[in-house]
Image (cartoon, rainbow, N blue to C red; front, side):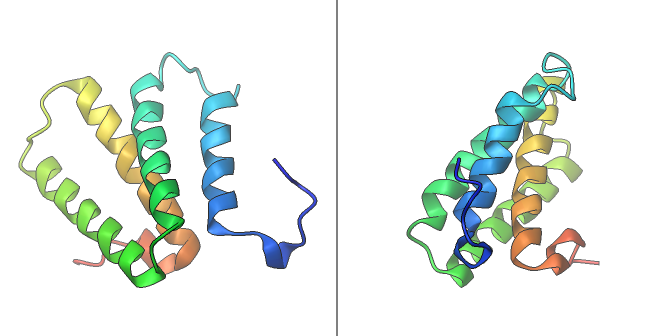
Length: 113
């Protein structure tokens, strides 16, 4: 990772890559305890990395807001039964929210309320 970039050259790709790197290498949290949460987060980061390279801002935001809304319904309807799946999808959701917050802090709030 290049930590010597000028800040005006720092991109959303850099942020996602750093979050992905942190998830893979951090020693703060017990990897075993957060295995499924991390798995979901890495899945989201990889998907977003692919999308951010070819989508415009509105398309990216629309896609990931739609995914978050779908996940919210699935959580509310208790479609996720297995604890591992719940943790994985929570990690996936939280990773998406963390990236959307970088684009606009309003996305840290539930916009349906």
